[in-house]
Image: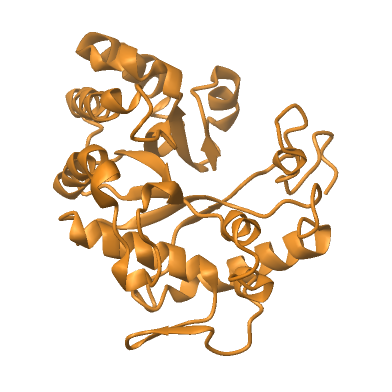
Amino acid sequence: MRIYDPNQATLQALRGTNIELMIGVPNGDLQSLTTPSTANDWVQNNIVAFSRAVNFRYIAVGNEVEPSDPASQYVLPAMQNIYNALASANLGGEIKVSTSVSASLLAQSYPPSAGSFGATSSTYITPIVSFLATTGAPLLVNVYPYFAYIGDPQNIRLDFALFTAQGTVFQDGALAYQNLFDAIVDAFYSALEAAGGANVEIVVSETGWPSTGEAAATVDNASTYYKNLINHVNDGTPKKPGKAMETYLFAMFDEDQKGPAETERHFGLFTPDKQP
């Protein structure tokens, strides 16, 4: 599972469960973690204190920080300091340090073979990619065919977004694409290669479909998306066939206080009172 901050009650509840955990550093905490001693304290309090009983897998240092965001300058230094603090605690080999990005980081995503970060994003992401390549950590990518579809319904078919298209929707050289999820992931793989990260894996750190809030956001469509996604991720993508993709469903619960769009409140597999 993935949590977005080191919530102490959640960490206590996970003790002894052996549930693998991706734990987040909130964007508002990034600047403070550029101080090595603060990063060390963060690791001691939130990781080392639980490491014998909680199965930490990744630390996501920031979520969807845009290159234009003032916090972007803090992401890599915070990642480096957390990585060093983990190494000092003899946990460096077990827990990978990364950051979670959105598809907006791609300057070009179509066709997937032409995927690139572009000039604006490159100065931000290329040093991060270099860090990931050196440390053997994956890039965490939030992948949302839903947002791509509602942003361009004239050119993106709903069946392509929901994994229900029959046969190839478009051909990219020798690679045939039947769903939008694969196309987005492979565009990121192409961008990683262009940025010097050909050996960097991708973990899909969020993907989902809302159940209400606008025309395409229905329980049926959400159900179709999740079921087809779960059946598909073990197959890999056209660019990485047969390589299962570690993928996190967003989210466990509807976030009924979120916004501004109504759909933002309805990405959960369960309601806030735990009803499916």
